[in-house]
Length: 103
Image 1 (cartoon, rainbow, N blue to C red):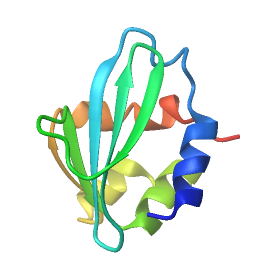
Image 2 (image 1 turned 90 degrees about the vertical axis):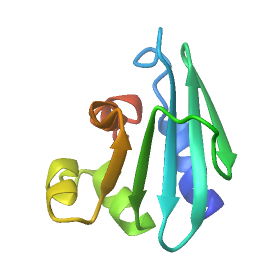
Image 3 (image 1 turned 135 degrees about the horizontal axis):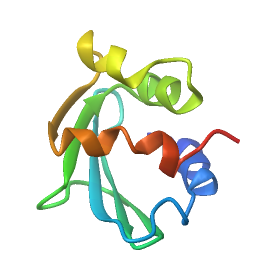
Image 4 (image 1 turned 90 degrees about the horizontal axis):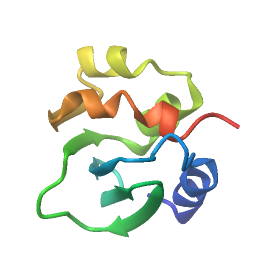
C-alpha cells in the first residue's frame, strides 16, 4: 500500500468513534502486502506486516479499499462479490467507515 493511502487513513481517523475500542484490523492486499491498524481507545497505530492475533482480517486489493473508504464501493457488496474476504469478527469491518469518515 502506498504511504499516501496510509497517510490519508491517518488524517481521516476519528478518535471519538474509536473511544473504548481495542481492536486490530489486519489487511492483506493482493497488490501491496500486509498491514494492520491497531486501534486502542481512541488512538491509531499503522504497522506493516502481520499481527499475531487480529480482531478481523480483510483481504482485498488497494483499489477495493480506496473504493470502500470513498463510498464508491459498498463494503457488503464487495464482500458478497468476492472482492473482499473477511475472517474473524466480520462485523468490525462495518465500523471502518465510521472510524475513517470521508472528508
